[in-house]
Amino acid sequence: MYGLLSTSIKDGVMAFLSNAKNIFTSFHWTDAIDIIILALLFYFVFSFFRSRKAGTLLIGIFICLVLYAIAVLLDLTGVQYIMSAVFQIGALAIIIIFQPEIRDLLDTIGSGSLKGIKTLREQAHKKQAQYKAIDNICKAVHVMSKDKCGALIVIGRTTQLDDVTHTGIEINADVSYYLIRNLFYDKAPLHDGAVVIENNRIKAAACILPLPKRTFVDNDLGTRHRAAVGMSEVSDAIIIVVSEETGVISVAKESELKRDFTEDSLRKYLFKELAGEKSSQE
Image (cartoon, rainbow, N blue to C red; front, side):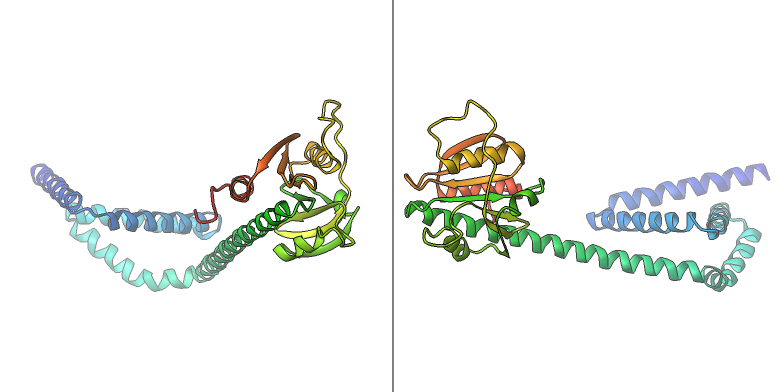
């Protein structure tokens, strides 16, 4: 009896190793994707049922499956017959027992998928709006630089700019090349002060910015440039300045002022700082 059992176990192990070898030799990258999806599905189902009363019943079913697998491996006819009968009858019983949990599980998967799709769409829409806003800003700044039209644009990031927007006139409009140009037109009523842009929208115009607190700021700087440096001291915003005298484009960030930007270099700079990318095409 012992010899027969030993031979059966040996044959079972050899068959297992042979099947495993065949699986590995024919393994394809689609099989890896299949395994990953199944693993994630099993993990999600297990996590879902683990926090519910049916979780203990699920563990019992798993133990029965393990026993059935051992019975097949060792060719235990009696155990196989009983377990197969249990599973045939139990399939319907499982559906009835787990009916509330199955309904909740499908509802969770459905709502989670819809939420994920909605989030991805919102992120894509936001990024597209950001690209469009940066392009419109750069085009407007380039033209104002050629025309030597003074401009001061504050682009908010994480720091709230309500204290600044409240000093100006509320606009709340999409970032538009034509709107930016009209706001800084020298005969327009709102051309003095700064335009504040947050979340890819022009929030306000004719805003008053704080002057720098540092005593070592270059005295040759004009009012716009000093206001830009002052704003960069109290926020993480990016402030663009167009000189009315020379048309030079400058950018203030983190208390530093960089000069001599072109349309292309400004676009690359804004994509890097605001979108974390080198260009809108990447």
